[in-house]
Length: 224
Image 1 (cartoon, one colour):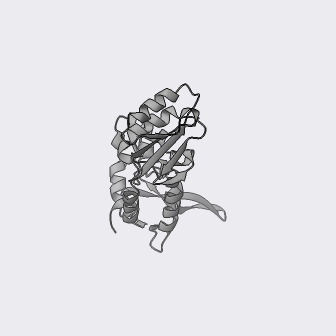
Image 2 (spheres, rainbow, N blue to C red):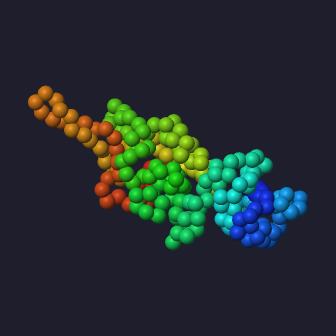
Image 3 (cartoon, rainbow, N blue to C red):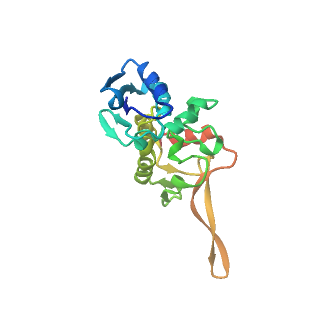
């Protein structure tokens, strides 16, 4: 669990009084200094994310505002990069399902749509791999893990992103997809010119037409 410490000074902003009122209503509120040198401070955990979002809304665009995460000062935009997506989550029809994708093309097994590595299309991580001698697609796990780390890093402080669960899903991803035995998948082919004719060449795998998202995810996360 993360703890966010929000610190802000006096401001001529029209939102100043509202920000002070919101902060002052919190159990962890404290202040130091007087007049224009006053500094307001609150500590909020992941469990108090709604209060955090409320206060942060009033502090948009302010100078000299600060945020510490677990006692370490982090640039405001970096520490709170997740807030716009979390706001969308809270307004979604199914907030709990939002992170795993509430649209067909966003379904993902990682627990965060911001990874932008969906199960439903032949793009991104489904091209990470190679064929073995049995024409089975072997997922490049190290590259996939690298991509996940890079893509999820900006949102690492999001209260809804359970990193341990994400890596558990990653560890359970089976490294081999065999479209000949698993009806959830099919080969991706391209035409290759050979002499005076053409032939097809397998270049990857993709979800088979008509497959349900839950079936694809079950196939992907099942053990070999």
